[in-house]
Image (cartoon, rainbow over all chains, first blue to last red; front, side):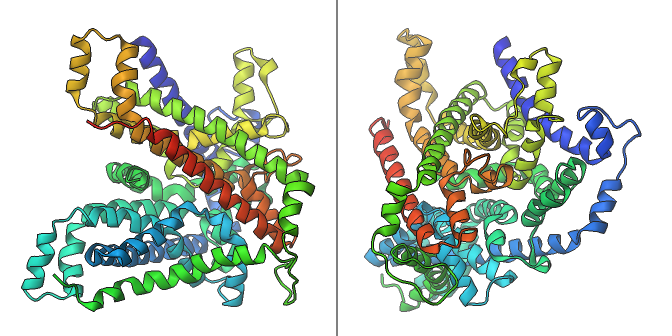
Length: 269
Length: 291
């Protein structure tokens, strides 16, 4: 019992200490950090790093880009994936099954496998240095997992509901909007959170397709701070906190949904 | 009951995007892998299986990246699965404390890889890093290392970071799996006088196998995809000691401008992943029971 409690505390500290150090370092000067990375700042807490990072960087722009890309990617992935899931559920024939397999195959292929041809495709389409380009690629890369989760859920909905709606004269679009979507809300919300975390944190696609500062998202901007600030950890951690803030705040309030969402992709398998 | 034909329209937008931005690049990776394309010029030649031959016989760095990937994978899969399982077993009951702790352990999962990379670069920093300072405080100076700069250990340092990053997520999957085991099974085992180990081996483990399959498969795939973390923490260095297949594809293509060769490595990468996934599902499925 004692050993159990000890292990739980050690693990908790392993998570907490680094996070506290990040917060603490962001309100210290570089000199104070070099003097003692774990100590409370001698000169008291200062928010100079936060002011400096907004002056030196186009933080607001990066933040806006991340928000636009994430919102559109999540919404459109959910819309297109639930349409496909509905289609597969309703078709209930070999075509539906074949399409399901085709989409889920995408889960097996890591994004890094197709980055080379995808890059030249984006170049040909003129979709580099474009938020629209990022959104389109994001949708196609998370569509497989979303289709997988949503189809699994929609298949458990009672068939009689759809049949009754058909008799009442409802067409496919009405049935999709009035029956399938409302009943799939638990699964949709879990998938939405999973997608939010994925798209907000994505580094690979911006790294490949964005070179213009005007279109950079937070993870890419953050990565480039490293080249600029080197081991100026107070500045780097200030960036980390700003970039993670929306996710962390959402996590505090929607914890249960996050846990359900982030494991949905795995558990359903 | 017949479904109206309008059902096919539901596939249209998704299928279109998926075909253009996923299926087409996947097929063209295979196509370019037989060429010497540099990625930019219009002209390229077909070189047959030259790229594949080069990968397997002439490229010692590529061989090294496969080895690094395997080292990284083994450490992450073993450590992460054991940590997640051990902690899942001791925090099965839903109490205020366990619910809070699970949420805390899960927390790193929602951070971006770049953030995690910065946090751990600071922990591992040879001079001001908190790991080396912590070791000296408790009198273990001799263990202090240049964690990311020493080519012999850098890949393991990255693996530990990956475990910190994702163990909480796997823990939750195990908890969900374990909570689904009917309590009566344990009562029967108790009445029969089974030891703790026997109970684990005969009741818990077989029923846990489905979640274990998922955790191991997911962790393996995740460890191959750890591009962001490696890219942001070491960039593959020092001396290619942390270069994994994914970061190597990036550097061959976008720093070496050898798109044809990078495509061949991508195809090999895809085959490796398919093969490992297949093996794991086969191996772990044989242990599966249902009640």
